[in-house]
Amino acid sequence: MKKRVVKMIKTDILIIGAGPTGLFTVFEAGLLKLKCHLIDALPQPGGQCSEIYPKKPIYDIPGFPEVLAGDLTKNLLEQGKQFEPGFTLGERAETIEKQEDGSFIVTTNKGTQHQAPVVAIAGGLGSFEPRKPAIEGIADYEDKGVEYFIKDPEVYRNKKVVISGGGDSALDWSIFLADVASEVTLIHRRNEFRGALDSVEKVSELKLLGKINLITPAEVIGLHGDGKIESVTVNKDGEEFRVETDHFIPLFGLSPKLGPIGDWGLEIEKNAIKVDNSRNYQTNIDGIFAIGDVNTYPEKLKLILCGFHEATLMCQAAYRIINPGKKYVLKYTTVSGIDGFDGTRKEAPKAVVQSIQ
Image (cartoon, rainbow, N blue to C red):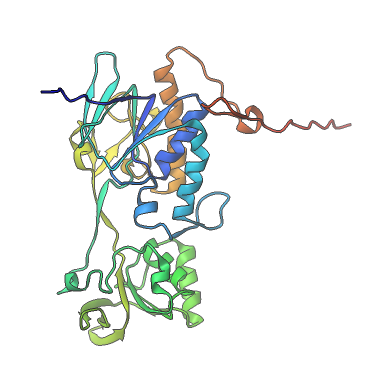
């Protein structure tokens, strides 16, 4: 019987999670001449930005007043491709073993093995399921007008839409669909919202303009329709009434699960990996880092731009682990240019020095 050959992929930094934080790590590591390989259970890079929210506008990426999540993924892939990252997609990181030389071997659920001296967990919220409201019969309308994610806003073109929720997703999609749907109704069980103040103010403006129907404090308690959703029952201050709709979208967030990573001996707090931000987001296991939404530390903010910052500092620590005793002098890309692994070089423009008399 022929023995099965197990493929071993070797790299400098093994990144678990190919969302925005993981993809940006490729670029920052590349500046340090470090090679990256990424593992992701999804069949394509981008994490939630590709799988769940590809058409969702993001407003807090520096330099982009607004960028769609899918476009952000494309830009990050373009930025990092010069450093030739490797990908293992459609496979879940299952086990990790520390070797005598200090490196790690990570094996996926399909048996693919990866070896690296540094592991960076950038798994976002981990595996996730939408939090579904406890409405009788809601499962009967799933994919028949009830959706928990918005992948393509054009589905709602000239349709009546009811959105339920009080966080950023509910606010952002209500704002976006106000110019797409024929009617947008936003329902929240409180008068106060948990989202960004700017988004709350925008929703209030759109309400005054008649572009969003805002119903608070209230909640959807019933669904109706013959074969597909046609209306919802709303309870506001004890009074019940119906709102006609073609789509009901409850956006109550995700239930995150770390999955097998939770069994790797890492210190876990509230389903997130504890890291030491004074040690560039290293976990309780030397050589294993956690960056982005998957980690937690005092004053942690779950923002993409914070993940980018954490990735940058993590790469500096990874360089020291991989190159002990070798000093790296930080140079701005505007001065040093960018050297790709393929030998190409993007030169920085020559600085112009003007003397002051």
